[in-house]
Image (cartoon, rainbow, N blue to C red; front, side):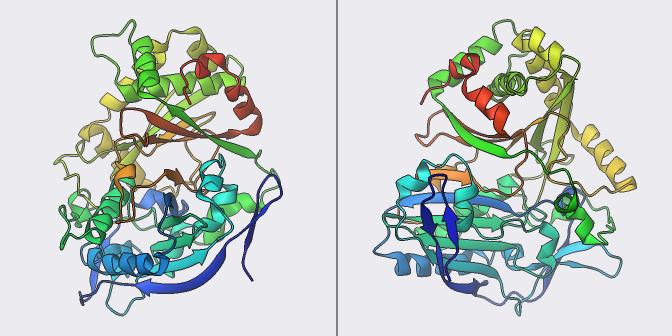
Length: 445
């Protein structure tokens, strides 16, 4: 029986799973393995990272498109073979990613929701009604010990296609995710080989062997057993035009220090102020700003952009809500700028050594009290992922790894300097944010 999604209006959107297959590299590669390193291991108890791409058209050619995607996948996995493997542990209990020719490979699911229009999905603000279009909801990364590290679901709509991808976050970050997606699209649009092969030796970034104790693993997901149920979240996408971004940047840079604030620092300041107002925090309440920063160029020696794995670290800065609100925007922007600028190779090394001396398995929501945590990046060319049936109409993150204060930044669809800001907040705070004129003044549909 087909699973069903129910919208707020009570309309059932049926998503029927048609078929499940597996795809692996088209050439035998033999056994290959690489240990997970300090940059990977903290994410072992996060959920699979989900990305959803909505395309118009392609309905008549659905079967042909599906086969073309699988053919392209067989080619691109020759380079990105780690995605076709499994997690494993060596005799010392150190996690590694292993590929062998007898493994199943990447899971590919075909599905249909032929009563649903692309417009139905494009107007969805939340992710609850999108869950059936994405595999591996509520699946933790350490389950990659016994299931594929990548699952792809292609769903046929009435007038378009939806591609839902779930990546095991323990083996790759956003930069590697979109490197893979663009490489796969490259093959599907006629290239015989990918233009930038992945750099696969993650031990070049860190070679410390860390044994993790995950027993009993159920404790890693203990929230489900606790009595205190978290407040319901709401999600919304705020589309900031290029003009709006320029206004925000000019406002934050009205009284800049020696070094001007970047677009990211300016927009982050705008969001941090607005979310803090929306939460109606007490003046003495702390609020944390967190950014998951790419460390490829920060480590010593620097790693190439094509480094495949996790090479990110969470960077934190904290202040009192009252002080944040009473201060001009350059106060918050300076804190964010300083936190980012001082996170150099020395700081990364110190963080790694501290974690290795006492390995802590983070939960996905461990980003700080009253936090605003920014992930993804408008630098990722997500709207250029064209497999031969057009560019996506929408790119979204899935329901996994969302918590109060999580923010995803994406490039605007028009390809300019606009930025889409996808925010998850407790329902009451989101209602306040939607009415915040200081926040919405610069927000353009």
